[in-house]
Length: 303
Image 1: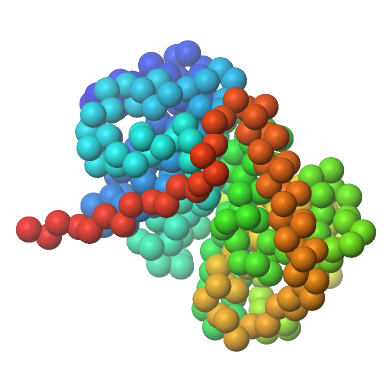
Image 2 (image 1 turned 60 degrees about the horizontal axis):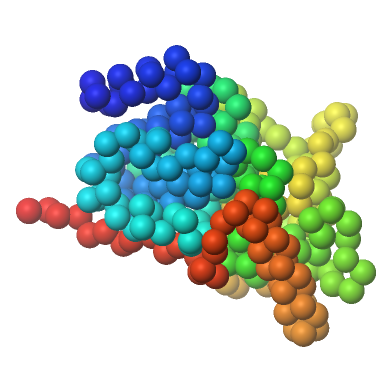
């Protein structure tokens, strides 16, 4: 991090403004990884952070976070132009995870993620509490939702169901309403094949985590036979298992997920999810143009 960035980070720390402090710090982390890493991960993360800042109370603009952001605007114009009207498809730490996985070997990924997460202090950390590795032929990493606030979480889970996740994961999560009650007329929960392994870990410590009760409901995951502790029930779709399994199902298409037979009912459920999303966006005073942000595929200049 250059001197100017360090000074600005120190200023934020003095004000105990964890949103701006950690948003700035995690952007700096990604920029430092840029020389070797895909730029689209930074592009998508900026869209996510700027969106979350715009709907936050108090509200934050990119300038509030970055100060003089001319350099970043030149490199990543998309998020600066669209954060007030387009929705991101991922929460910030999912983008960090993708960047780290693209650059580091399996034996270094956990260590790097832990270093990043440990450095984020305060209420708004922009880091996930857990990651998950789903494995069949290959390993696929996912992160839990990394946004603070019930409304923000509901927004990003709805976006994931409508736009981001594989339909199998989306169907499973949409089986439950935002109030956590199971729908009477729609059941997209799944039972994973025995050859699919799915294991969550604490981001900071690397400790193995048993699936929460919600993930047991959604994906038929089994809790550890050695665990006598009662697991927590997170909001359906919050956990890292959803993102990880979605990536696996997109790539390994031979793995069959039972489709929901009644397509009209699925369409109705998706309409309900979108209606709830729109209501949350109105409460957040976000003027959505009904589209989702697509990160720039930036070609590296080797010259």
